[in-house]
Length: 478
Image 1 (tube, helix red, strand yellow):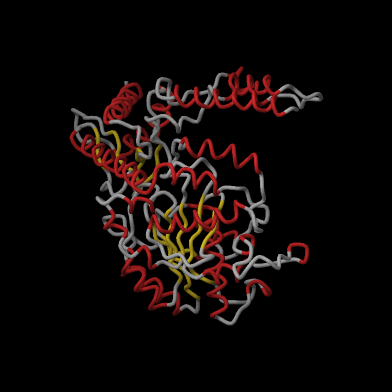
Image 2 (spheres, rainbow, N blue to C red):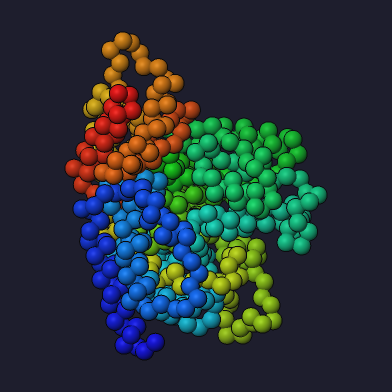
């Protein structure tokens, strides 16, 4: 391939990407793929001979781009998936062209990652000593990284070397979560040998926050049973409702009990940038670790999570292993990123983070986030004002939990029937193609949840969403 061939293909690829992004709002949010289109991808034969780049790009334009997940559309309110920031899209191409392994060494990606991890910490007001964090594939991996450090510290305090001896023989380590804690915490506990039965589910108050009094009782009970409490997981925005825990009382209790306070900020931690809700995050900086996703509210293209820790030495103690073939006498006192996490070969994630943050700046990001939280509060008002809808939780960040509750002229609505209806509604709304939301269970009830991350969303889009929910409900009950 000549450089001219690549240049021409790159221009074509840029046009494809630009046309795709420009046309999103005018098309359906999401529609099921037809069987022929699906089989084209599923049954593609392994090619014996290569194909020219222009043919490959034509296939991308014909067989891939017309069938998106929908998350780029302003009426996509599902899960916690953002539209990609244009600056991040462009930077991804440049990062792929360089294609380094960002494990360590003296090249641009390593130094840029140190800078953007510091930027992320500054954005959310988390302390950042040198070496106190790294980029990961997402918060699921960041959680494993942070909980590994917590586990090793607790074992060391108990006179145990987990890296050499494993966990066999020591009293079980116990962590504390709520019913709304993200499933990645349980996965991490299982993977790290802690066992999900040693994750205690602590009650929350009416506001959805972890109850410090209930937590204290659970800790005392486990200590009396000879177990080793070591971890509390708080949330800077639960996935179900966007609830933010009260960090100061939890940090006080963790300091008193010598427990590691980890905050799951995957989705919600960047909400601290909105002055309207910043008070909810008081005490976040007192956590021992924080996991969060630039690829959510900031719009950095997937994948990009971040693990932040107060004490870099704990992270390095959990992971550092430098074989002779990776010695680097010029690495300096911080060493390599591969000493702070599980990945040895690490992609160049930092460039798309740098481009996304640098393009919008702190003020631009704060304005984008404030817009989505304001729209979420407005959606909560629209739900409350509609007699056929029911708001199920206070709107704390940019997630709105509600359900359809059609008026029943014959008497009170049957809860089982309401559950059945709201369980079916997300898929029904999605198939209609004009809006996209997902569901969950909250306090034993089926709910609809709308997550607002896209600053291009308008109040008109909110009206369309609610109209689609009611239309899908009428089809279901009619």
